[in-house]
Length: 98
Image (cartoon, rainbow, N blue to C red; front, side):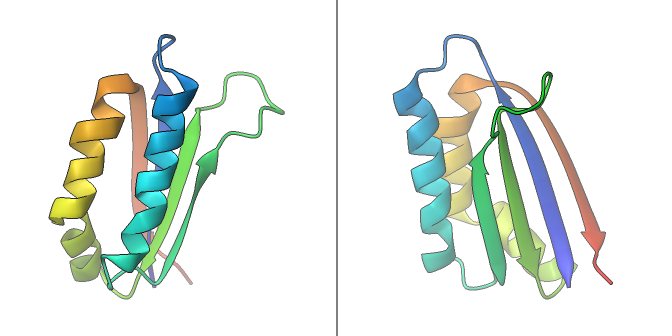
């Protein structure tokens, strides 16, 4: 299994509607990208200070399947249309799970 983890922080001016649209659009991706084996997204629970605003955890059979997701037009559209306009910072990692 190959896992992709992304942490996002929003700009101060990001609206609740914009944040909700990111979550909705990302949650639609498993129905469009069959290479996704597991997909969990959501906002930070707010129990710790200094955390990122939002997380994505995606599982794939292989790095090649991750690349299909990464470059898929539906995924790119979410990034370009919803995430980039409110993005303050991003961190990501990909790794093989045990």
